[in-house]
Length: 300
Image (cartoon, rainbow, N blue to C red; front, side):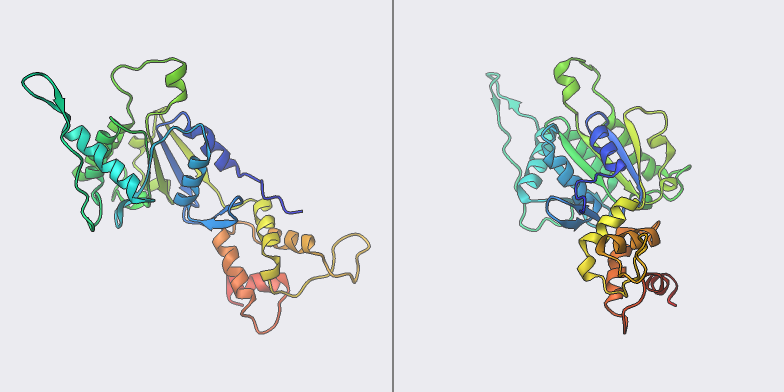
């Protein structure tokens, strides 16, 4: 029977480290698709991480945002977007006092109907997030970060600016209480996604216990087998003979066919396997698994 409860090692690390780190750098197969067994959907990595965080009752985070240099900062709904902008304004314009020392509210920001991109510049984003950290517990995913720095070992002035802003965001306050309450509560979380760790300046993560690197590998063999079991009805191929002892002349069953494809697709991403399914439906006649893989990889 298909095992939908299998949790990859990297995801177990993510769940554990989210509770204790300030910055996680996820590198490797970050541009793949990921399976959500609860909703039975395939997701991009940012959406997959959002669901993991929201389903964990131990996470105290109040705002979840995703940022890249093309689309800027975006949220799952307008309410969370407004909450972020109000926190920025509250930190920028704290309540002032009148002559009788009574504080009065500066009001809430007016959100235009079509404000365009929020903070396309990473330095502006980090400056805003530092303000939000005074009021909220945000989770911020920075996607495609391998494109943000031209020379990781020698970033230019603008690049050093946003890197310094990020480092200041993940530093603790000047007074650091340690007790049962503070140990259970994080102070905001940053997640950097990169397909190439070599393009991330080492100064961001080296020798800092607040930062954790997590590698996302290609799907493991159990993940690949589960994928083909889920989509066995969508897989059009010539079914091979059984490899079980005494099975000469017997057509392989679904489990055996999934085992065969799991072996043949080592180092495949889920997006590769999705495209393999699509290719199997386009061949003039069903092919044996090995021939279908050769057609996909080599065009032959």
